[in-house]
Image (cartoon, rainbow, N blue to C red):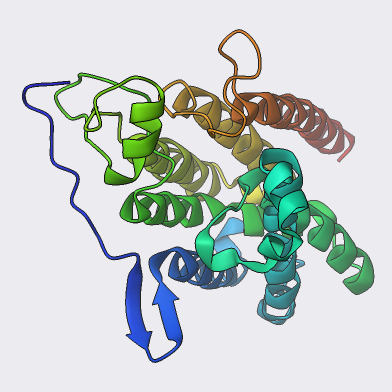
Length: 288
């Protein structure tokens, strides 16, 4: 344990409690994230400087209608994916636990798949160009990840691996896991939630902002989506080197975690999409 380890600032996971109604930071992060993506996407589609002469094919009304679709995709996809991939034995023992969202247990990869399905169905139903819709939605997602990771930190969950770094912390909720592993109960760990908030959130959001505002990437449908997939996948893979794997899964093989395994296809798909989109744009420009 580091001699100069930081003290974990214990937070109350419940922000407001009125009788049986409790508003938790974790739930608030999801609500705020969804509203932020809607607000930010609406600003993007309303800015004619970011689009070609025909303007954005996606309107503010489209985005308002899509909020419900996205919410269902996030909750259903994130929860079901977590239950079946990360914690199926618990679900099998207690099926009703799938509905206990207030106790945590959401998978970004599952939420991502849920939103992708929602995007496909919504674009088909509204007859919208798919990649333009995906781009404006993907542009704001990194900041929702930022707030989500901060909520993880407030909850004292998804802590990092044991470390003696000067900024390592002893997470109270990790006491039982420390003892089971033969470690001191107050063993210090990386605050990996903050690392992921920075990498997956702040860094990826900044990169996308530069692409959108400096290089007008929205005029090339698919570019923002591709860079988001590459950026998030890479950030998650890096973050997993500091994050303690879920206790019920542990390391999958050779020190590789489930989060890393699930992120590799995102990076590969993002690279393929970026190459395809770039070639299509060049071919279109050459034909004009």
